[in-house]
Amino acid sequence: MHRLGIIAGMTLLLLGSFSPQLARACTCYPPSLAELFLGHSLIFSGTVTHIVPVTSGDWSGSLVVVFDKDRFWKGKDIGPGAIILTSSGLCGYPFVIGEKYVVFARSTLTANAFGTGLCHGNSRYFEGNPTVDFLDRVVSVRENSWGGMKRLYTSEDK
Image (cartoon, rainbow, N blue to C red):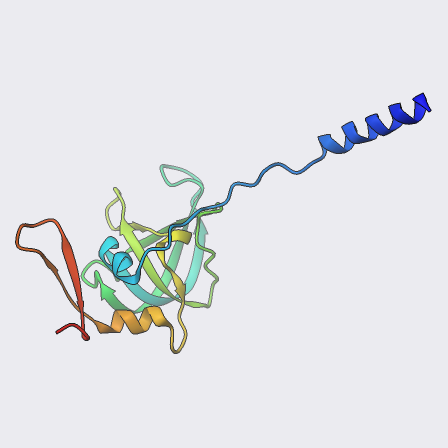
C-alpha cells in the first residue's frame, strides 16, 4: 500500500512538471469607431503584397507589411509610401498576403513608418463591412472652441 502511494505521488509530481505555462495574450479594450478614427493618423484599405521580417535594428522582431493601397480615409498625403509595421508576436495583426484589409495605423518615431496591431481596429475588407460604412460617413473632425477635445462629424450629424 505504501509503495502504491509513492508511485501515485511520483506520477502527480511528474505530470505537474509538464503542465502548460499560463499563456499571456493581447488584451484589447474595444474602442468605438469614432475613437479609432480620432486615434490613428493613417486609415486606408489595401491588399497585402509582401510581408518581410525585420531582423535587426530598433524594429527587430517586427514585420513590415507592404500594401497595394487603394483607398484612404485619413492620411492620404503621407500614405502611399508609408511603411506599415506590426509585431510578429501575439499582439501583431495576422495579415495574409493577397487579402484586402482596412488598416488603422499610428505614426512612429521613425519617419514615414506607422505601427498597427491586433488592438488597432484592423479588419478584412468585405462588402457591407460596418467599419467601411462608418468611414464612408465621416465628413469632418473639429476641435472644440477651447481646444484639445476633438469631435467627429458624420453625414448623419446635423
